[in-house]
Length: 355
Figure (spheres, rainbow, N blue to C red):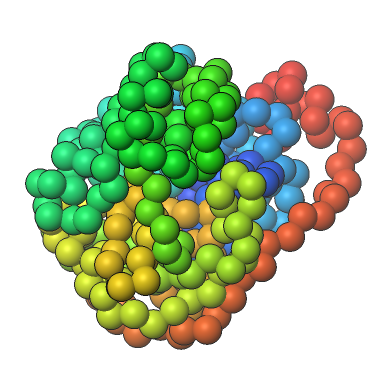
């Protein structure tokens, strides 16, 4: 199958989305889907791409029309390309939106292959992905003159003591892809190291603790140095894993400027999230740069800037203007509920790889 995307086709859009988990460390997929449905209405078919059979959004049938299992990122790019090709022959996907950090390398690698299948994406380059990586964040800050906390990248637990003596406590201990723990003493630091090593592998990042107010910024770059959309949010409730469980949009021109400076400096293409710590004197530190939409991205819709819809428009080559106004004081409060499904649905997905 070798099909160039037709931007003028009249059929309803079919969009594939990953990141369908919705637990206490939620993926962005469900929020992206909700935003797309708000933006495109009935003229939309959503294809879920799942790695595990218990990703909750799989079974929300009012949100996801059909789900397919895809291979884990460790299976490599060829396995992913082959599986997407199989799905494409059935579903005729127009746009694909990956939402996990760990899968982005593979999707970027097969971006041209996807285009030849008729699937549009809007992703950063491998260079953009690498330079904002946690292990490169300090060098990234130095290159573009952003405030970034001092850090050390370590590979063995024996290195913790020296770094702790250098930075002091509290100390941030971060996994390669996800998760961060605040260590109050050396025992906490060793415990966090081994937990993150077992879950995400090496290296581990030890980062100097910055005291202040936690703020996250959801943004969308057009790949030409412009930020199409910027929405800052202050965390109101934070889980033990450091995830925002409630937040509120805020007005702060310095935050808007910082996000625009990031997009301009990197020519960022696609969704991004800046995790910011604002000190009492107003200094802004970039703690992390996430290379995709955050799990709270549906708040951008409520604030008046639908970032996932704008990304799809950019992917399809549609004219997309910068969005410069939004509503401050819009809150999100996340909640959990029990979704009841029949075991036959779970078994079908497990046995046949689709539901």
